[in-house]
Length: 280
Image 1 (cartoon, one colour):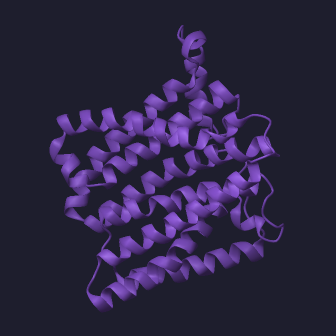
Image 2 (spheres, rainbow, N blue to C red):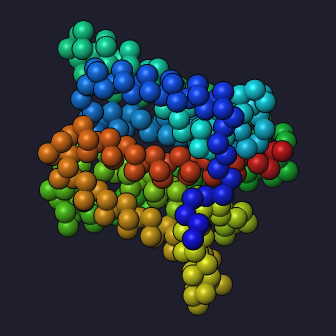
């Protein structure tokens, strides 16, 4: 049974060695510095997750020079994005420890990550403007984030009513996880039911194949079931990881960041492809 998405490509050996060496050095540096990882830092990593999805969309569209494309193909793009983030994270940790100001880490990660996302978004819109036949392609990016917010709000409100203590322990990382997977579910539903794209990942494809057999399919399509599954799973993970955050904040928040990235990265990739794909 296939589990991983189709289209994953191992980069050529020189690229792979470069990524492995730089990643080992970055991880070693972070391990030796042993910075605290807070829920605010998890939130500050969100723009980097979006940037990773955007980078991969640019690679899929052929917008990178050939010499750089292996760094931004999947799965190498996730490592490349981590290294870019680490280039901000490591000096921020050093400076924060010198000044005894751990809040600086989240501020720097958030600032530079947001600046990167804004730059990538500007490039995508400049590329798409004038090349698309319909302006509809230009609105999917903001609609995606707005739709995910609409889905996240009631789900997290109900989660807070039922598991108030867990939500308190999760901090801002909790709603980020739910939002990230709401964004993935919403963007996937838009792709398969409105735009007519396919699904590369086997498990979501099976969920939507099942939804296609339901009597609701002619009326609301098949992507809705995947979105519901994503929201339920994300909410469950928030509850499960909340105790770990209290016992071991660094480990718990790193896991929250990983879970959020698993949703946010593919979702951003979808939305940026919806924008630049029709312009090709």
